[in-house]
Amino acid sequence: MAKPSHELTPSYSSLHLFGYTMRRHRRNEEWSLAKLSDLVSYDRTHLYRIEIGERRPPQDLAASLDIVFDTDKQFTLLWELVNKETFPNRYRRYMDYESRATVLQTYMAQSVDGLLQTEEYARAQLRAGNPHASEDELEEKVQARMGRKRLLTADPPSHLWGILDEAVIRRPVGGEAVMRRQLGHLAEFADSPTVKLQVLPFSHGEHALMGGSLTILRLKDHYSWVAYKEGNDFGQLFENQDEVTQFQLSYDLLRAYALPPKESAAFLRAAMEDSTLWEPPGI
Image (cartoon, rainbow, N blue to C red):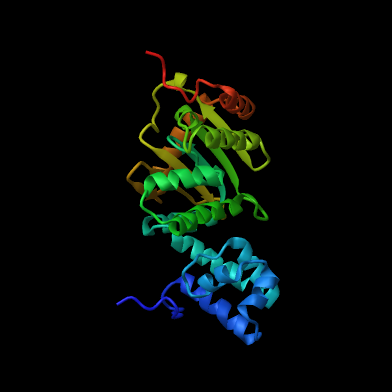
């Protein structure tokens, strides 16, 4: 039988552990939720739902709790566990690798990689994948996806090289306005210090990675590589170095045929202004 929502069960999940730890520190300080709300600038009801394990804590709240409780990144580290637990089991091993990657190389076949998505785009994509999810469930997944972006702003940051199939650009996820903002976001980062993006035009034709999206990770020891291949209903992690090498060769070949970053940025900006991009072709 399910436990009542007000019970704190720190061994049940990282979400419960976060709430339990937050309540324990608050009570040790003899603070009310209203007092903590004033200190961290979060609504008292929101904090209560986090304490009892009903809501996923935002990343910036974890950092604020470390400051007000003087806990030396304890809540930040707990948030990392909560964030990983939000993803389905089959992704978690990949997420562990991604958190240790210095270089990420990705081929985007049908949609923008989560590291480069706007919140609006992510919300539309996640809603399409689970149309019956509650707003709270959806928001939890959106924030988990946004949390992955810390890789690109860490010290030192990870570096991302992305190849976007033209199909990604021409599918208006979330509608025209959302897609225009997403394209603008991509154009802004296409030739930035930590991100390089290349567009693969339809005119290139067939290639070896047409079966789905691919991500190749170089880990911090600079010698280990892993690859993750994903389609609409599958995801497979490859850790065998011979297999990863074959994927790397296919990726390098595709990169040779894609537009350079500056030309890709221009391509993305032109797509933003193309009024026919969102219209069906004439008969």
